[in-house]
Length: 314
Image (cartoon, rainbow, N blue to C red):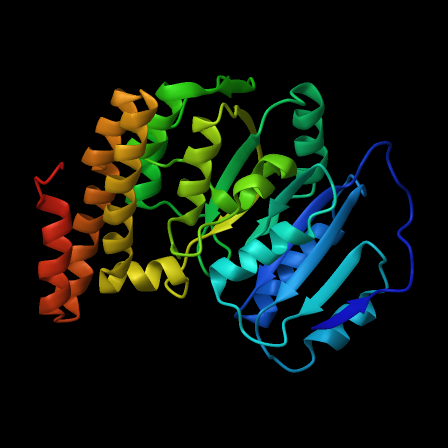
C-alpha cells in the first residue's frame, strides 16, 4: 500500500470532531480531482478526507502530495480490491464518530460539511443522515430521470423545509418499495456501520442491504432537506453498466427475497411484503428495455422483462 500524507496543516478550524470523508476511488481521474476540490472548498474546515485509490493511473499520488493539506490522506492499494472490499477498507479506516462515503464522480456543495455536522449535533443518536441532493449528468448539468422522479414523488417523505426523523418497520418498508436515499451523500454513525460493514457478496445493492440492517437494529434516519450534494448519474457507472446487462437485477432479486425472510422472522411482515414486491426495481428493469431494444440485445430484453413482470413472491 502506498500512502501520501500531506505536509501542511489547514488554516482555521471549528470546535468538535472532524467529519471523516472517505473516498473509494476507481476510474476517471479528472472527476475524482473535481470531487476532492469540492471537499477543499467547504465553508466548514472541520473535515478529514481519506482517498483509497483502487486503480493505477499515473500521476495521482503526486497530485495529492501537491495539495499540501494535512487534512487530506491518500492511499493506493497494492492490488485491486474491487468495489465492495474497497468500501470495507474505507470503513475500517474511519477514525471519527461520523463519516460519509463520497463517490469519486460526485460533488459536495460548499455547505455540505456545515449542514451535516449541524444535523449530527441536533440528532446525535441517529445512525443515518440524508441531505438534500441535486442530480447531475456526466457533464455536470442538472438532470432528471424517471427513476429519480418516481422515488421523489412516490416514496421520499415530504420535509416542508424541516428535518425529519424516521425509523422502524414503516421506514424499512418504504425503502424496500423504492430506495430514495443517495448513498454517497449520506453521513453515517461509524460505530453502527463498523459492526456490520458492507456485504462482500453484493456489488450494486450493498448500500440498501446495510441501511435495512441498521434500521432493523433500531437505527434512526435524519432527513435534512438542505441541498448540499450533487449526485452524478452517467452511463459509465458500475450500476448503470450492470443495469444495461440485467446483472444488477439478479443480485437485487436475490437480496429482496433473502431480506424478506429475515424481516418475517424479525416480526416485520409489512416490510417483508414490500421486499417481495420490490415494485420500484421492477419499474427500473422495465425502463431499461427500450435501450436494450435499440442495441438489439434480445437476451437482455428477455432478462429485463422477466424481472419486471415476474409474479414470484416466494
